[in-house]
Structure formats: structure tokens, C-alpha cells
Image 1: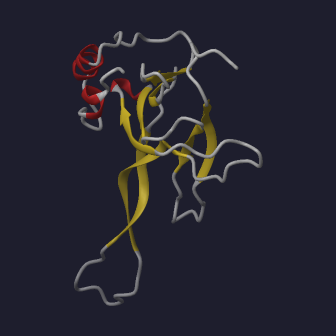
Image 2: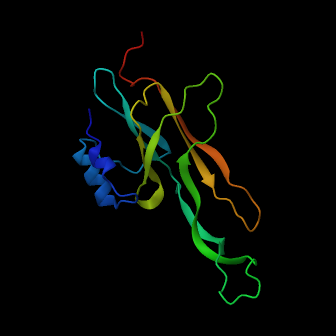
Length: 173
């Protein structure tokens, strides 16, 4: 079983050196910049392999921030305390998050996702799976944040939907 403990010990946004060192400490090859988007599932080497994590690689950033209108506390001497005050604040506008959509009829249930680690450059994510993920599917969405001032709701698009039924080296019976 790869010891993914070093990956789980990473901060939420590690440096490139921290990420490389964690992969090496876990006995894994250091990720290289891919030529195309890809998803790699990290499995245990137990007699019955268990999916432990996903490495999501993208040619574009998976997280983007920009100034977004945010409701803020008005001045204490305001004439109308119910008035809404707005200010531009740097906010995650695009992000990779676990899917909240119900599983389609007849598909595998959703895997538990315990944490998503942002890789340097924001084009890579290490997604840690909860125990018991075998026989499920890992589903992640790209999420565009809601804009309260414009009245637009959060929007989601499927980024990753990977079945975790068995490791690729297992024989089908």
C-alpha cells in the first residue's frame, strides 16, 4: 500500500518542492507537467486494492480568483443601518469542488472526498478519498461562484467523474 500519509500532511496550497517531496516520501514518482488533462487514481497494493487519492492534472488553472462584489459592514455612523454596502474583495471565482449532484440512476454512489490540495500553478489537484471508496465514483465539479450583486447563482460543470470499482491490474471475473 502506498503510504499516502505524506500527501495527506501537505498544506492546502503546497510549494512545488513540498509536493515533489511528499510524492517521493510516499514512494510515488514525481508528477510531471502533462501534455493534456488527465486523472490518475492512486490505489493501495492490498490484496483487495482500495482507491486512496486522485491526481487531477489540467492544462488550465482549476482555481481562479478575481475581485468580486461582497457585502460588507457599513460605517457605524450610517443614517440607514439596513442599507447594503458593497466592496470589491478578492474571492475564488472558479474552483474545483466535490460534486453535489445526485448520482445518476443506475450509477455508482459518490465517493467521500476528505480534502482537495491545490498544486502549485493551480493546474494540479491532489484529491484525498475517504476510506471505503472502492465501488464508488469520484465526482468533482468546476464551480463558478455566485455573484450576489448581479443576482447570479453558483454554476457547476462536471470536471471529473471516475468509477473506482477496481484497480487496473485486477483481473475481471
